[in-house]
Amino acid sequence: MSYASKTQKNYLFKRILIILILIFFASLVLYPMFWVVSSSLKTNNEFLSDPLGLPDKLMFQNYSEAWAQGLSKYFINSIFINIVSVIITVSIGSACAYGLARFNFKGKTFIFYGILAGLLLSPQVAVLPLYKLLVTFNLYDTYWALILPYVGFRLPFAIFLMRSYFLSIPKEIEESAYIDGCNSFMTFIKIILPISKPIIASAAIVTSRFFWNEFLFALIFIESKSKYTIPIGLSNFRDTLTTNYTAMLAGITIAALPMIILFIIMQKQFIKGLTAGSVKG
Amino acid sequence: MIVLKRKKYTAYLFIVPAMLFILTFVYIPIIQNFYYSFFRMNSYSPTKTFVGLSNYLDIFQNEIFYTALINNTWYAVISLIFQVGLGLILAITLESKILGRERKFFRTIYFLPSVIAIAAVGLMFYYVYNPNLGLLNALIRIFTENDFRYAWLGHPRTAIFAIIAMSQWQFTGYIMVLLIVAIQKIPQELYEVAEIDGASSFQKALYVTIPQIKEMILVTSIITVIGAYKLFTEIFVITRGGPYDSTHVLGTFMYKTAFFYDKMGYAAAIAGIIFAITFTTSVIQIYISNRGEN
Image (cartoon, rainbow over all chains, first blue to last red):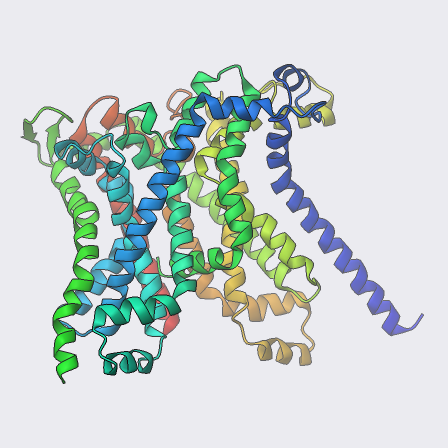
């Protein structure tokens, strides 16, 4: 046997070994998820007697049951809070990022570092005074009790992400707009925002993941069941659906699905936003 | 010049709305939190008594505080080993030349759990660990043929580690992706030079990849440590601090003090301690990532 074919064989062996190890880890990740989805399609009796078996007949009723138990309401609440918070964060944030990227003014460095430091502050440290503030202004137990603090806490990240993108846009593009008689607001809206779509998408996706999954504020600032978001409503299910395991597991699947779908469709923007945010805080 | 002058005044119009939001909902509450921590107060009654540092001193006398601190620290240490350690090994493997297009497939799969809400993952594992119908014990029963029905979450010794294990499942792929992004920025020439010198793939990882992404390894380590001390949702959803207060972390300890015992000042002092830990770690991170850029 020649040396070349021996190393080639060696290479192939190594490659197969590594792929097998990677498949092992992949099944470690996927199997619990698969187990939840497959169990969510069984009858309760099937699940209790054989937790590992596959469903005999697909029980999609479990999904409609979880949905009817209040999940539909929580879903709508989450979507509403999410959309409003993302719109406010992205619009206010992009304006601020533009101001920081393109203008010189008094106190700019101070303001910039102030916003940057906001990335480091943990929501837990603000939660008690925020609770008091929301009670005082009659905002406690309203959608705004979540939207306003969410925007406040995610703005530093959104500003940071968009500012570095705006800095990379050549100034000549805007100068021609000024010569054509546009003021700075028109330039921002008509020139900057359209060419910044990719970064705005990243900011929107990453903040939206945060809002969709947020737990602490949603737990403390909302009291009425009718205003629960998905994570709170779902964890409350555990107490109301105590013996109806399969409907509970269907609920978990429904709650997880939107972000999984969003991730698979927009993987690039997702990862771009996450990495940009974490490197700097 | 006219253009420049106009710019100067409009700058504030762009910036002020965001600043107001951040001041009102982030900075002012955090400052207030420190103010509260020096008082004895309830959530609804308007009276409060100044007690100086005694809230902080009381915390240091509380057993749950030490349980919480130890649990947070366990979480940090184990997460460093798995999320950063194993994450690094996976990142290097996925970026090595031995793999072809399948690397993208594995990357997507490993990252997947981190996009799911922690509350959903927590509930999922609540059932995975269920003694009778949970996935884990059912698998163990297949391999041992014993009637294995151990309650992982019911025993103070294993409960916190069961929760920590869940977080490794959820976030190892996330840290791995951050490391992959850093590896992809390493200039190819460095590997070419190493290959000419006859370096094996293990040597290339040790002498090229790891030194080149040193900063990112430090940054991910610090993200992991900060995350460990901010822990709340995982514990609250799965055990709420039980059994016998064994799974409390600083976050759940604060929540219980504030909303169970209605001791707002005391809870604010716990929040102050969380701030001290996470903020110092963050400052170290900024320092490191700035040094990396220069």
